[in-house]
Amino acid sequence: MEEFDCIEIYREYLRSRGLHPTRGRPSDAPARVRMRLVVELIEDLETIDRKTKAADKELRQLVAERGSTLMDLHGIGPSSAARLLADTGDIRRFRDRDRFASWNGTAPLDASSGDQQRHRLSHAGNRKINRVLHIMAIVQLRNRTPGRLYYEGRRAGGKTSMEAVRALKRRLSNVVYARMLADQQRRDLAGPGGQSGTTLDSSATGSNPHTDPSDKPHPGPNKQANPTPATTS
Image (cartoon, rainbow, N blue to C red; front, side, top):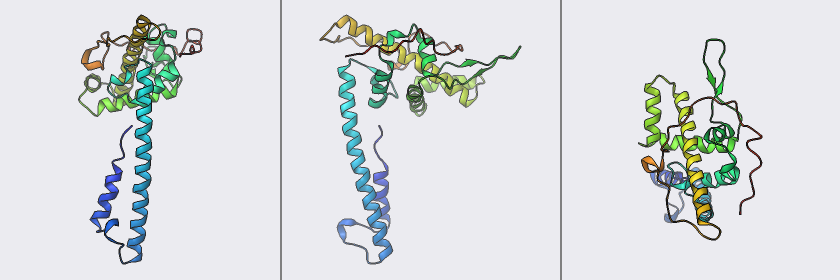
């Protein structure tokens, strides 16, 4: 979660108008009202900021106790990692990364007609996990990351901006699947009551899997292949 930079913006607003809460109240009534409202907003934002940091700290601890390394991926924070763990359950319930992509809605659907080959955005799947992957994609696009290079490569290949973002989300779905599968395998090797000290070795500082992603369309989630997640301890 991002810190509230607008707190400093409100403080600068006060300073720019000569309104300093610690230096007495302004003389005219409109200025006093403005100062009171801005000070109240700052106090509210500071309260939210403290609660957010406390929640992040708690989530980080819970994710770490689960033995997950999802937060090592660029664009995955405590809340996103917790959401992935909670909604996915046992990652092994997905036969492969393509089924995982169908479940989270990042696998494009075939919308071809005759000789015209077309794919369309899937509105099926787990929308909460789809949003996690969308946020991950946006964060990677804002920085010089392998995800951004992949996006730029797609754009150079003739894809529209929206199509390139969809392709990036599909790729990141593979990254997340590989990381969660490796974490699960490490927990299995460690056994109950212990954690392995090894880390997942992936290219580009944990942002890409070793294998290339599949951008082929899929028919959607296979309900029989994806039973209800097993209860995890």
